[in-house]
Length: 113
Length: 114
Image 1 (cartoon, each protein chain N blue to C red):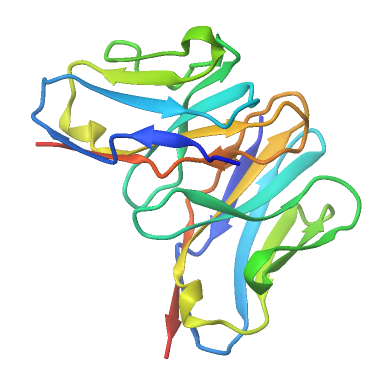
Image 2 (spheres, each protein chain N blue to C red; image 1 turned 180 degrees about the horizontal axis):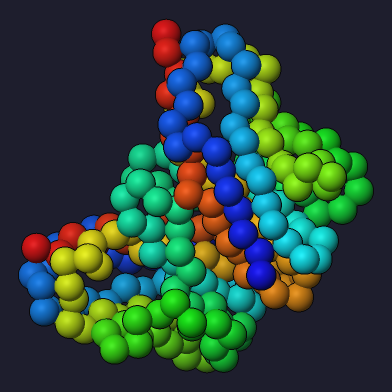
C-alpha cells in the first residue's frame, strides 16, 4: 500500500524567499509522484510529476521537485516566492497498474509581503 | 481539450435529505474517481471506476453513498440520507489510460449539510 506524509500543515514565507514544502512517501513498488496546487474554491491543478528518468523535475510557475529514492522524499521548491503562490499544496503518489492516487493532508502556503 | 465537468458547484441541504452530484470526465479517460475533501484535509478516495466497472469502493460508506457510471462515461454520486459530517467538497477526477498519467480534477461540488 502507498501513503504520503506532508510535514507542516502551514508554511509561511516572505515574498522573494525560498519555498520548501516537504513530502515523504511510502511505496513497495516504484512510485509515480505528483504535486498539485489548489486555490480557494477550485479543483486541484497539476504542478509537476515524476514518473521515470530525471529525478529533478520542473513544473509550472517556477516550481521544481527532486525525487530522492534513498530518502523516500519528493520535496517541492521554488527559489523566490510570489504573492500569487499562496494556496494549498498536495503531494500524491500512484503506482503502475493501479491508477490510484493517494494524497497527503496538504500544506497551506502563506506568502508575506 | 475540455476539462472535467461537475455540477452543481454548491449545494445546501438539510440532514436526512438526499443529494446527487454529476461528473463528466475528459473524453477518452477510462478511469474516473470520486474524492471527498473535508475542510483542511487532503482528498480521500471514495470510489474508482475503470470504464463502467468499480475498481475500488472500499472507503465508500455504502449504507448512504452510491455511485454509478453508466456507459463508462459520466457518473453520478448520491448521498441518501445525508448527515452533518458529509459536509465537504466532492471532487471528480479522471485519468488517461496509461501509466504515470496524472489525474485531472473538476472544480468540485461544495456540499453543506445543515
